[in-house]
Image 1 (cartoon, rainbow, N blue to C red):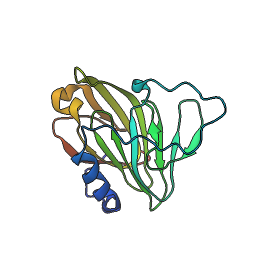
Image 2: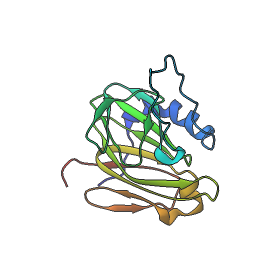
Image 3: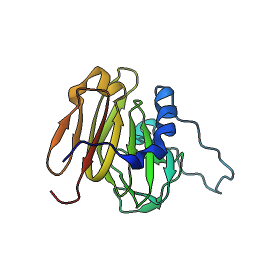
Image 4: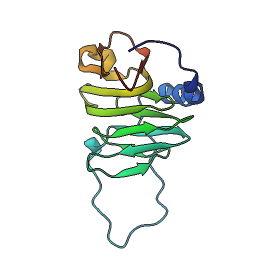
Length: 173
């Protein structure tokens, strides 16, 4: 594991600035263009961890059920999704507590655990950076209870003591 600047993340810098500026507001409601004949029940508010703020290039989301989808801005992510970026690609995500995550090129990030109660501001976040680069700006969980936020790599576990950091992880230790 090493800490170094990530030139590939400049693409998402504006999205990150926009994400953190309004970090404590809910994501915009998606626009519905057509309703299915039989509407599925709406998921509970806590069923998602956040949403994808911006995407550049080849970015995919792998759900716990094994379904892979092409990521698009506004897509919700669940507390246990995997986000992968291809070469010359990047993505930014905003979690419900206002945490902003920016993935650089050739990255793979597992959201392993996310829970947040907006009333009490209690929660926890565990992410695993399997490869690539990640910039993280802490949200309410990291600011009110830093011990509840953890970033794992193949060679180290990072406890959060600051609000803005960058980490890179090689695919092989």
